[in-house]
Length: 169
Image 1 (cartoon, rainbow, N blue to C red):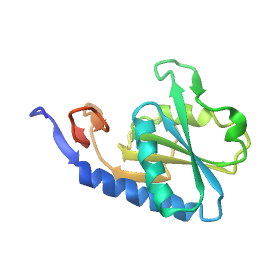
Image 2: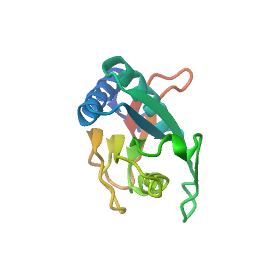
Image 3: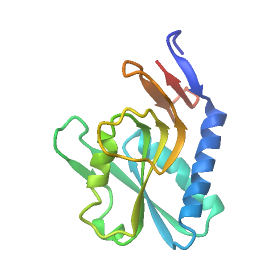
Image 4: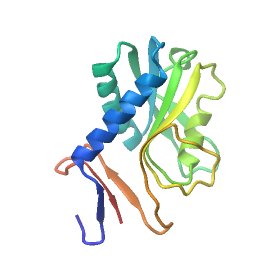
């Protein structure tokens, strides 16, 4: 880790945050038979994988994992998923990303599901920086962090040779 990086969450703290979020999702969906975790590629998807594992340990409902690929630099919503729309239609959808900054990524991610009937849509982020310029609210948050715009929050999950961590640079 470079000198200009400040450790915000270590591996154990990330695991605790994920477990807590999983219990919150469980409480919010006690009556459900199935939920869909829609992870925004790539770090949101990695976080969704971890949430899926935790939820399968603590709940009885089926957890389906969906990958959402967004063209984040495009000024219009351009997205694709790895699953047919019929498989998530009529279900609870939980959109997962690593960091909420402006809200654009989550707004685009929500756009994927707006034309499909669903029970409800919830959002999960590991870190909320509170610099939103889009009208996005998070339902489940690991950590709310006050930062300045010049600072960057980096989430490292499942990178070969590196331990999981969240740092500010």
